[in-house]
Length: 95
Image (cartoon, rainbow, N blue to C red; front, side, top):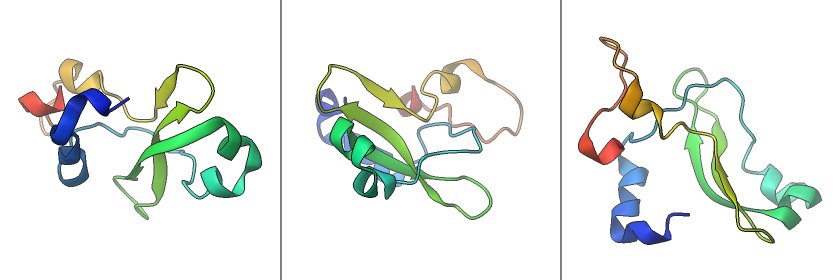
């Protein structure tokens, strides 16, 4: 999923480029301890709740057997939501 980004993919580690607007996520540990998840999906990134306890959650996964992936963040929202003082990153790199 991130292969075509080259070295620029590492910006996701240091900059808030995605919008995480949800309350529930899958604990990354589940991709090790749950046999079903571990056999089907490769965890490709984690993120942390923006508020509260800042718990980690699975931010993206790829199937080990099929050509599909999924994200828990919202890559489309940085381009479409423009509320004053929303805290949404609208830099060129976030879209």
